[in-house]
Image (cartoon, rainbow, N blue to C red; front, side, top):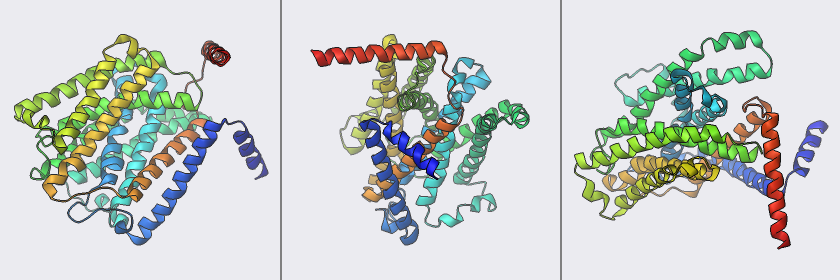
Length: 405
């Protein structure tokens, strides 16, 4: 115990004020989340949410479940590129991406428990089969894909503890696991869009379209690489390691193509369904649609410049705009676009936002500690170490010169 406390004290002493402030925020978010969790599971949904019978799906479904599944799509898109297509140049970023996807799906499952009134019946789809229900298909695909992601992550643990024999055995199943993961992801990402096809009288025409399942799948393909870029940039800053700029610049080219296809299909759908005029009416839904398109088009403009695709700041901004744009799309489909048709007005309670922040913080914290103690990132070569040290030295000299002036 004393050794642990000593290690924690040394860790705190080595932090600058920014890191200490960040940890204070993290601890606050965890404590308030634990309080709200107790309140939700003791007193029920009414004690912590503004949900009603007229509007039973709110922020937790929009952000934690529908949005969370999309943001965790980097796992299947990157594994498909590396193991099926054969783009091995992305191999170095597979492990952090699979870990992000695995934790993302765990948080989706946990977030669903918060939202279900009778959360203790969540296991029912395992034995009470209803193959005609889209939700049944989504539930099974998510369960199976979570298992696949776990098996894809297990080699990291086996490698850490030098369990060579089981590691070699599991590596033989890498390709079948990746193919299974891609198939399951394709099914449940598109099926989540199918869920909203059953409410044509409620979902606003700007988002209700027969190709909603296809758009959900394509948007997952788009946000996957974007999330990889954002996560790589953030983890490089947190762990003070070099950014895989060459790999991410190459990945940005695929993001550019996927964005072009997705946004192009979305605009063509407006013309086919003759709802183009509704995009520019400047009413409530129109403004949210314009914001959604604006974020994605903004990312396309940034990626159109080769200098921005090879620049860490440009990549981060483009990736962030895509992540926020696709997340807003999920909010628009499951929340904003449903309000007028349902005849109810919904705004999330502060406690709903607090629970979502708690889940995101807990997921980020687990990611941080797993990366600290397991071989998630590739070892940095001596050449890269010298380059990073050189950059740090140049930055310190520049800052010193600015202070003198």
